[in-house]
Image (cartoon, rainbow over all chains, first blue to last red; front, top):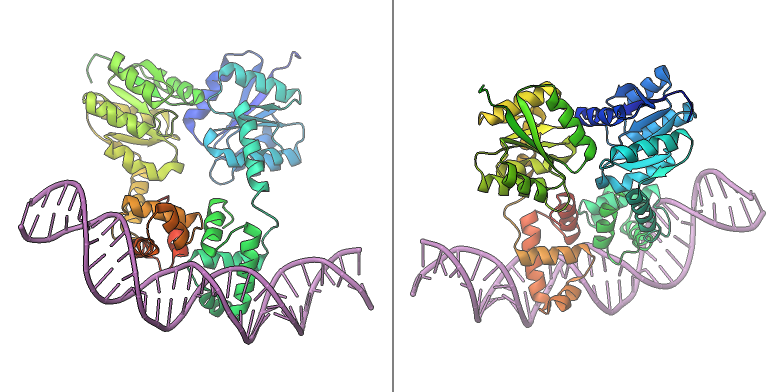
Length: 212
Length: 212
DNA sequence: AACACACCTGGCCATCTGGCCAGGGTTCAT
DNA sequence: ATGAACCCTGGCCAGATGGCCAGGTGTGTT
């Protein structure tokens, strides 16, 4: 460890969480809380003006979400490390956060010591993943590999949305100014790409996998 | 205000949040934090042994959720007031929490002062709803009134789930050991109750309204 | 120029869908 | 016991579905 304190910024839209993190950090004398932000946009601005070493970033925030903020921060200041701090309810966001350039991923039920370790690791450029986070990551990736053979085209998504509204093929055909055959063609593609046996199953899968 | 301090218990599965709330409470000298709990079950137990005046309760927790814990606490100790503290993402849980007997509902982005006011109100038996919470409550109730004519029966939900899996009527009939006619009967009921014109629309609505 | 890809169309056909009709049975509260 | 629910069944039928076949167009890449 160097003599310099690790300069930290907290980005979370909840007062209580900011206060809690702040309390955690005060226990250790190698940390210095230099700024706070209540949303992603603020987080980026604070990084601009203060150039902290590490940002503790919530994912679910108004105005700009944590993943987007992480991306912007990492693109513009590659010496600022971002640790994502979130609740286990948001499994599906982990991947996006890591792709955005977060070096750490912790759940909000971390202890002060674990948090401190993660911050020191991140500052040293070493990743710090909570075991639950790693697990959720595996789950998230394996879940996405199976169902798809391919991505849906724009037209297919359009048709899929109408299917989810309960429209029949003739109705969709009328709305899109194409023939029933064409709609059937798209529907067939959708079914095979989603691995569904019927339009109902396709819509069900699409909704659950948040394709629409 | 009496001379006695208001005895408070915090129930939240996130360390950080507990720490943050604790820090908020320390600012005021009429509060005394007497216990903490990391899930709903612990919260009930802590209430049993410590009989606090007010519980600050998170809704999303492992083992037993906050609504259930609130219900049990209110049933057994009607002199303990519960204030639900949650994030705005969980709009749809507000109603359940209030039905369970919570007297207050705050979002986690409250300030220390707002929290203090809410605790004092709750202790005096006066409700304390965050404006956003009230708004979400209205939204939640109005959203539920429209789509339903009636609740689904257990059997109908069972059929609905199979529909969402993409099973056809004959397949469902086979699984349930009933005839195709019976399945059709249930499907018809589901369609009319959900206001859907086809099974696909029914499944779509059911998924979006979190019925299944 | 050749190719892949997305998009469009028509016809044939077995199957599924969902509305309508009719009739059973149970259990539970009034 | 007289409903009121929920659950079960059969038949009839127009329409929708989805798989299969065959073809067409335009785009952009190589």
